[in-house]
Length: 293
Image (cartoon, rainbow, N blue to C red; front, side, top):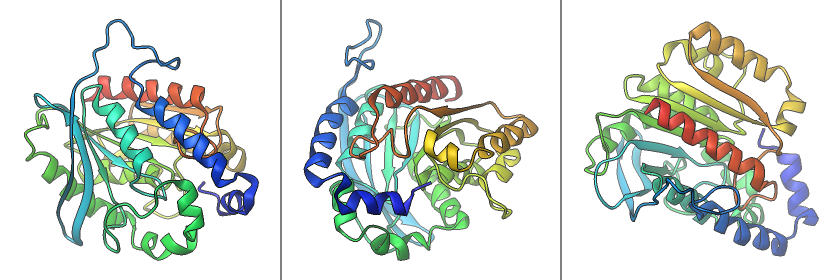
């Protein structure tokens, strides 16, 4: 889960802003690096020149803004990128750039567009110093499963109009922290187009209500990656079993694994960032997309 107690401990100084800066700076290099865990480019891999821009488009609920990055030439499969609780910032843009360099058209969306536009926090440290949960709480309250499904439909419609997007290929959806369940809502909303969903330390994937993501899997046509944080698994060890039972019952292909990293381990500006585990998760994501898109 996106643990409020844990983040408030960080805010009290267990992880100082100076240390945040060191973590974010060093890890951002790794996030942009085109190579393997050691930062070396594989012999059979060619990273592409990129084009990026800030974009916006209409949804049923207003004007969504986003960051769009893609190879400079040719159409490519699209990926919807749902950020974590601190939303769009350079760490997320760097992650999108790295994926785009692999041959994908990546759209990092602002889930809080109903209330605010653009970057609100430069990094996780700024998010904590800026009021953290108290600030984003009212924005998050509007992000019901139904709201995200409406957004996903608008996002797919916009992507399919872009020259950089190969609309004959499936779309991927990836999400971090609160964005984890948004990936499932997305494939549920547009099952004919979104063919892969990757959740990294996603919260709220297994719940009691009927809109729980694990209860929606049977009505989707996607392949899945559920990358679970080790501390999240310790708090809710039954979730991975529930996800496996649900994907098996739905007949959906799914990799479900607990990683050697705490909540936020894939995100370069998170104090939980763990490079080795993050690289493993990145490789699993690429394998998912190559097989499903």
